[in-house]
Image 1 (cartoon, rainbow, N blue to C red):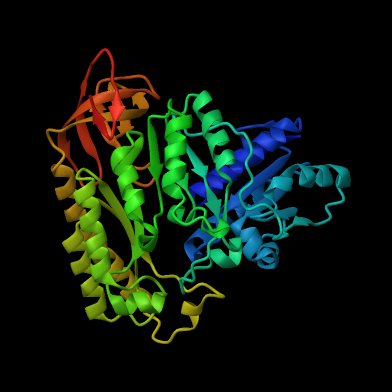
Image 2: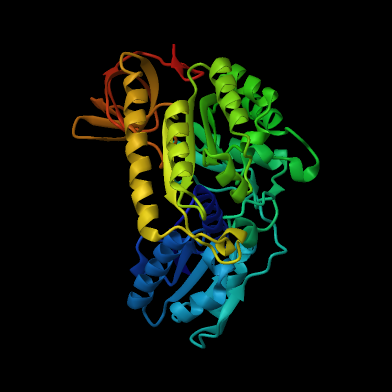
Length: 450
């Protein structure tokens, strides 16, 4: 059968979609780019927060409205797992559900759909006993960059987060599987691998292997030397060890970039969030990272409007942002999620106050981001080219993660998927502008072109 997959949500969903597509292709099914040409329409949904759920519902309704008599509509992923019954009520045209732990059975689901023909009997695979971290050879869909999921699920008990309810406890992918996937991706021409999990720094802890990420990074560097960049996303502050910092500083392939989702800067709010709340320890952590890796680019994310957040607590968050001056920041409006402890807390903050605080926090960070980007003017950086057209090249340096950070704009054209040298000539709040320097050869080491 011909199939079309639409992916919503986080990079972990991107990986799952790529693996589902590969399983289906191996079984003889054909992937198509246009929904109208497909017999099966698969939407890999996100159910993390209210806005993500609405986006998923909108996508499903749009496909349902145009679905032909000979087409099936499948809802996959987090929203299907979290609230399958509600999804069917809101979009009754959905023919099948497949969850976050059962997606490796996508071929079985297709067989059932094909066998039932036009009977249109609801067909669901929503078990939670499957493999959270299946390893399937796949085709990278982001050109020279690919995500590699090293674990899924989460053991943290953040009071606002529904991920453990949706995906269950953390399970780490065996190192041999991680290395195998990285080798397959490198063989396809991938030059940057982005390691992802709910908490990459908790890798191996579910197998009683504390501080396993540094060893994994060293194995990747040794076994897959053709990869130019290894990037780490989503690091839990309490799990960032001296060994990890030393590994980042010493391994040429590891990008000097780290994403630490801290969520707030006031200890009382962090306590209510059930997050690490020793703010002074976070200051020391950031200082240590910058001392060990002076050119490190740091990203964080914060939630505004958490229940009980007083104005003075919000102001403390702004002061925290100013004091640390993260290079990149994402600010999110609190969303009360059913089944989470935070949804039952008193003193829920009014929506209009949350919106106003979100705007204020973003304005503060814009000024910080501009200043941090301006500090790059005059430097020369290796740029991974992602797009070219009309005399302009779009790429990223080690300082920008794919899809969530800004880009580097270069005057001139270069080959997509190649590294070029760029001299930063100007800065915007989120993007950098560079002059393209032509060199016969470029080597990429620790974020520096040599």
